[in-house]
Amino acid sequence: MDNIAGQKSGLGLATHITTLLLVIIWIVPTLGLLLTSLRDQDAISQTGWWMALQGSPQNISVEVPTDAQVLDGDLWRLETNVFDTEWAQENLPADVLDRRRVAAFGASRLRGPNLDPGETVETRGGVTVTVEPDGTLVASSPEPFDDALTLPMALVAPPQLTVQNYAEVLTDMDAEERAEARSVGQRLDEMLFSDEALFGPFINTMTVAIPATVIPIVIAAFAAYALAWMDFPGRGFLIAVVVGLLVVPLQLAFVPLTIIHGWIGIEKSFLGIWLAHTGFGLPLAVYLLRNYMVGLPRDIIENAKVDGATDFQIFVKIILPLSFPALASFAIFQFLWTWNDLLVASVFLPADTESTVMTRFVVTNLLGSRGGEWHILAAAAFVMIAVPLVVFFAMQRFLVRGLLAGSVK
Image 1 (cartoon, rainbow, N blue to C red):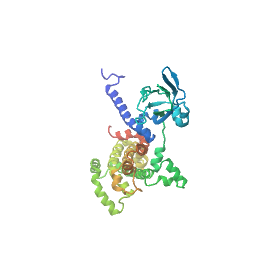
Image 2: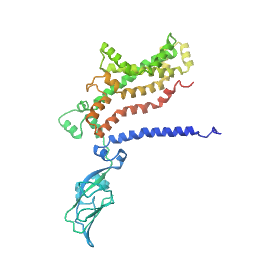
Image 3: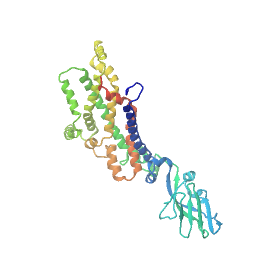
């Protein structure tokens, strides 16, 4: 009775739960990286990214006037709100006044705001102070208050998300430096393509990834059609060679390729890395596309041949349109690999700043000189993953169809 129609199996439920967990595991770090990239350095150092939408506390020494003190029995009592005083209206930031929330307070400037709201602290001279989360302050003293009370407080400001981190990482200038550069006539393109800015490596990465994705697809599509639908001597051997190349480590080809590139004069160039990525990606491309094309209906191709179509016409007008899911699935893999590549770029591109890609730029420039500036690193990391995310979500509906092609009959 386990397979009655209409009942869901335990395996299906486990699959859904596992998929949900994988989605959560993938989304949570990505969301954390995005929120971190939109926060300033002080907010990142004070609270975690999950607190970004709740506001971040700012440590401020608040002066509370004691004019409103009254004698209550044997004690002088002061009750006021720290946000309603004249000093607060003139000195506190507007966003802090709008939020009106105390995250912590203290009685010593040395210790800072080390007490939670609602607690009572006794200072020297028998003065007791209590501060509530809404800013209500109650203080009592056996002697009259002569001067204003100065208390360190952590006052919460509304969430402050900014895109200034992205502007800084793309130009290597903060807001003041950009304003000064504009005032002396520096153009935007000069800021973006400076040696320490990320925008230049971003363009270089696009220059590497797009041709290194298109070229192997074009070559592999022709090869896959020949291996799938054309009869010629040695076809089975070539298929076996393609499958064998899938397990060969690409590091084995570095030395021979660099020597060959030196012979033909394309070493340390974009053409050299395009051809290197093409060679490394062709085995997987041919394998995926050939498996997909073999599964296409034979009757369509035979009918086209009967009608007088050539192999090239069949390939262009029938095979390519029907093989788009497989082409898209490989394009996703190849683009993600070339976009995130560091090893091949380090071998086949020069080390100068004009040709560096983002992976090398982040490792050599940002992690080396700005390792503690998490707002900059987070912005740079999200710039790096933004384009792959767009490519993946734009083409992911073809991914499964292309990968599963040829697995069943």
